[in-house]
Image (cartoon, rainbow, N blue to C red; front, side):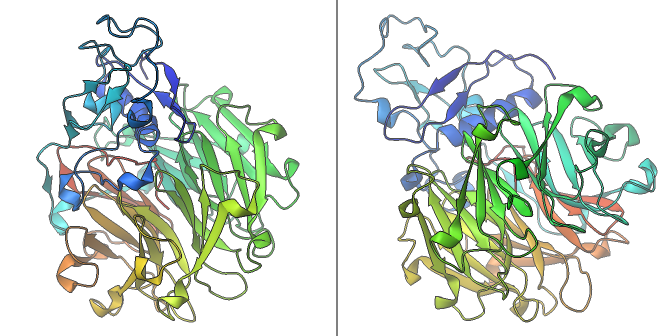
Length: 520
């Protein structure tokens, strides 16, 4: 991965304190994506904007601005001399090589502006004219993992670093640590585009992960509950060689707290990584937060909060998302399948109970319980339906511009009314216009009924939805776990299948704003 010119700045008061990375225009496309991921989160810290990934997504087409809080601030010395200094984002017409693609997300076009205090204004940025593909067989392609060896199987979730897609190792005959990586700059069906690295060679406990997150530099593999609860988080420095042990670190989270194991994915808010609590021998609610500016293996870099101190039933979550201000945790199982969504305000004290709140989805619909995975479209947050007493297809959606505690802010739709076998999903993803539900098990069989919602339409309108059976294009196209989007293609997590299946969702490639490189 080539070197990039970058710098870090702090957002002004009134927004979360996040790290901002900016790359100059001569950086190659694939590397620029990495910087864009951090900048997306940084410039979207005010969730009240409610803007979506692009003009096709049915909301405010303008990207989040990161300059509003600075508008009344005193300019730095030298601001206004038409020469951008090291402590300025811009000065007059000097943007230091910044573009909409580097400051919002890869693929965005338009013009930046410079505020009187020498901070960037991104309201002139938008997405290019985009063609979205119909959800049909022609859009799918398949890579047979058997070409890489019989041990390359058993993944749960995926991550993307701007160039490479990573599939997260979980279980074959037993928990394993063989990370699978695909180079999106190469042909999908070429074996040389794929590589593996066994993180268990670093630490025998580095096995049995579920989902990944990316912070702009490091890819994190999240320890889950496999054959036993796991607590060893592992991360890769994406600037370094993939197949070298020195590029990787592992840390046992039980050094932070004895209950810190058995998680189900993570989200990133621009500075902190949040691990979603699932099961450490029993359902638990201990959220872990890591300061990505600090040392991974220092216990002081980590903090914990037990959600059961807010609500004794706030435990057993399955997935998490960030909306620009709040971090959400998807309700799954705490001894019974439940609908208790938990939320943290990133502008407040992590350790204070007042910073946390819960909402019971069963107050919206009695069957709104047992979710696995989340996706955010720039305004609405979606929860992927998995099971209650039976596998179900009732997706839940929250309007982040509304009151979290108001029943009217929430809505549901039962996807199984479109296809009786469209139940039991694990994970969700967003491509800039559509939300996808990732098929797993419907109570009768592992299935491949990929469901897609067009966010231009109404959630409860059947015409807004389409369902496609992936098994019609791939012999083993069933039983997926999570997904990831690279700006053009959606990759389904190969949990039970020996095939990686991807769907070409749109052209040209661009990433949704506020995308944090992880879907689950």
